[in-house]
Amino acid sequence: MTPVRRILRRESSPELQAALPATLHPVLRRVYGARPITSADDLALRLDQLLPVSTLDGAEDAAGLLASALRTRRQILIVGDFDADGATSTALMMRQLTALGFERPDFLVPDRFRFGYGLTPEIVRVAAERKPGLIVTVDNGISSLDGVDEARRHGIDVLVTDHHLPGRELPAAACIVNPNAPGNRFASKSLAGVGVAFYVMAALTHELRRHDALPGGVDTNPARLLDLVALGTVADVVPLDLNNRVLVAQGLQRIRRGRCVAGLRELLAAAGRSLASVTGQDLGFQAGPRLNAAGRLDDMTRGIRCLLTDDPTAARAMALDLARLNTDRKELEAKMQLEALSLIDARVASLAGHVPAGVCVYDEGWHQGVIGLVASRVKERLHRPVIAFARSEPGWVKGSARSVPGVHVRDVLDAIATRTPGLVDKFGGHAMAAGLTLRESSLPVFEAEFAHEVERWIDQDTLAGHLHTDGELLAGEFNVVTAEALREGGPWGSGFPEPMFDGVFGVADTRVVGLRHLKLKLRAASGELVDAMAFRYLDGADAPEIRANDRVQAAYRTGIDEYTGTRRLQLVTEWVGKL
Image (tube, rainbow, N blue to C red; front, side, top):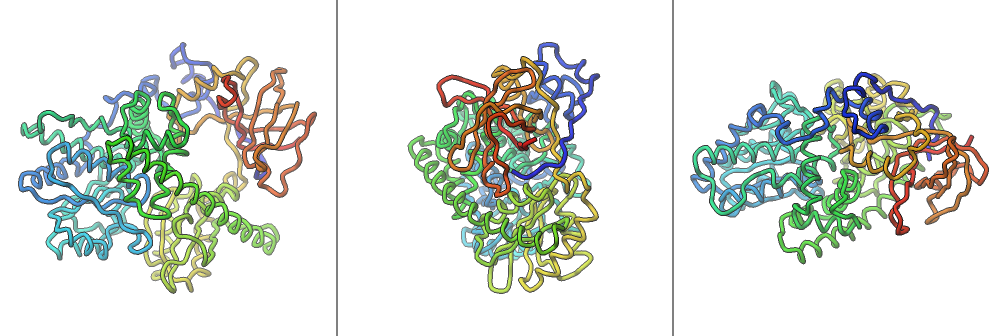
């Protein structure tokens, strides 16, 4: 585990704690007091708390465009993205358009290795062979100026639904729905692509209901698809503001009641997760990666079809297939991660310990589909933005960036492109993740520009790798009841962080599990004995040996160990250091 110089404890507002319901678990009350909550009503997470569809500019125009396509029987082709957000967006639109009576809506996902991201002119030419009357982009399109122009040359209208930040110019689409488009008054700028798709489908359903044009005998309520919204929102790691928390919480409720698509049910089953107790973390770390594996290593069409089928047997077979792909992805990622960290270690040594504020890593043999995960892992180790590059076509490289709070990586790329015209060929993304393309020969210049620009954004606390916690658990709080209260108190995620605690413990016993992990029995200051797991502790070559009778400081989350047949509290360490 990476050494941490300092643990910073979040301040919990006594005033907010006092305003919360007295029935809340005391630990949860302290945690909520340090989260972006304005009142107790923010904890209700009811559907009627969602921002009105009418406030998402463009949604009602999109509904009118789609309703016209339904009346004139124009063929709809959805062009999606090859990640979990794009897959859930595509599946949600396909399901709702079918329920609303559209004839054979179709979808197309660009092969990331042949066409790259978004509505490119090349993918439009492929789409044109299917003779659509209207192309609808989901989770992409806001930067596809050339692609939209190509569609217009083919006589095809384009409806762009996206959430990524736009460039200086917008595409000449028939309609654009994007909460981050200039002047859009929608209050939640953190809506994921699947959230935008949900709002557009809600607007369309309302439009058809207003004209008494809803088909009979079928459930057309878009809320029935909130399981897909929850999956895509969590998997895309967008900030969980109140609107997104409502979407995710409502989706989780439906999943726990078994009211989810067959594919998601089987993705969770393949991960050994029970529907009745599923959490946002299960979506983000189990179902999401299995779905993403299709887009990273093969073709996201496989993942979308898993979310579209209603046949349990077919869904099970596809989910198991995606699980196998995910295993391959993890093996490939582990190899690339070791190579990337080796490159970083060599660079740190050559720079006498100085690491640039923004780091680029590249190996011509790396797989394009996994560089985003490599960037994420290296970022976690170095506590700074990282871009991992892989070779695409001869002479060109593609990069996947992952950032840290306080550094808006898409804006960083925009500043570099503005200051050094021609250096970056294409780029797009949002605050925490972005993608780009540039010439391989330009890498050294870009690397220096990236480090320089990030230096202007980042603060020393971030570079030092400080951990933010919710303080200590007190005597009598080390139990399953506390862990259950915290699990049910979510959804947790970006912008609404999962509770983490810290403390000093005596070590009663240790043993190695699975060659990489350390299982500990710790004694709290109160004298209570508690189990803990330090996952991947032994991955670090410099990790100090921890033995019985040692004292350690740990930052940890609470979990429940259910594998022994009895439900026991288990601390899961984010970091543990020997004192």
